[in-house]
Image (tube, rainbow, N blue to C red; front, side, top):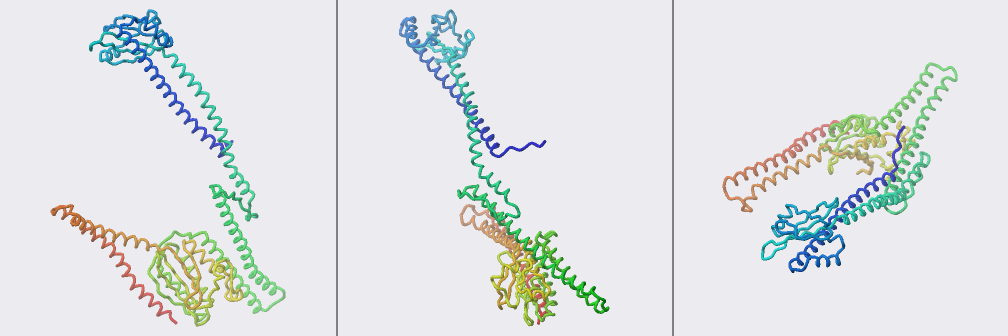
Length: 545
């Protein structure tokens, strides 16, 4: 049987109670130790005071029984254990409460008395712990008597026992009350989460328009509710797009299937000649070809939306643009539309070369379809802010800014009749955008210089940032080398000699390394540029008007 996990408020309560219990145990231990130390200090001070009274009585020559009487009047009976000893330890006098016993004199206490210091000991007398102070009495610099005063520690022990008993009751009681209060507070604090959970359970695919209520407190729970609402909004849009896509796909499939069915029904309705059957089969084959192209486009867009399947590799932009321009030139020749290559900067991106070729070719095909005879379609590539920009510009009628976002949706045709004539299903731009987005790029449309449409693909440069970092590293290294050479002389920190020569050698070496690194980057760019211009010029000469 699977054990059901504890709820969050239960775990919070347990953690809170456990932490509080640990804190109270530590505080109780510290308080017990502090109380024991404080009581011990009080006992030692009181013992020392009584011993000084007895010592002063002995010095003044007053009878000790009178001193004992005085102590009995002003002190409790527990402070009536005292005795006088000779310097050699012989008992001279003791209080009546000792009843024939003597307070022991340890070797450590004897040594302290010889040194003129009071000594404190804890001894056992008749199974009772007694705290004893030993105080020397000196006259004219010599030891004449030893005063010992003792007090049983039972009162102190009883005080500590009562304090421990109180802690043993108060700590569990406090933890229990705190746990109960913490559980109520945790439930109250997590109740909005339960409400959000119940509200989320009521939201299904048919009710994605519902939202989780935001309390307006601006706290973490409100931010969670806003995040969930944003996710629901994205899911609603996604489900809406899926429904529209399914409906549009069904509509696109129904048209050729209806035409195919009608052609076959007409052909089978009566006997026909061979030529008529061939004409019907040819028409049916055209509709089948249209269905195949539509299925292939749908499959390609689905794969592009899921991301490139092949591992990302380095793709050189220039050969890609020239290849697409060559294919576009053949397409444009049938419609008397020129396809040419404009300025193409050397650049490299990461991705699937075949998918990127299809995206760029879809843009060229779209430009050729909607550009009137005698117009042109131009391909360019540039590097801007570390990104690669590939643009396809035509001299067609252009696109209304209000329709700029719609044209990238599947099955959208701004001119449906014209699209039917060209055989398009309205998936070319959607496929291109899906491929570009899968490569972490963007596809945008705007107005061209001649009023036509200009589609721009922006992709991250695979080498641009690396070249910038190499250049910056080279410049920094060169400056560091110059600083190493100049600093000893400018600051006058190193006298002329072998050390200065060594520093200059190191600095010159570092500076040369930095200059070499920067020169290599610029040299690579300079050597690629003439080759690119020559290649592009040959292509334009061969594919011009």
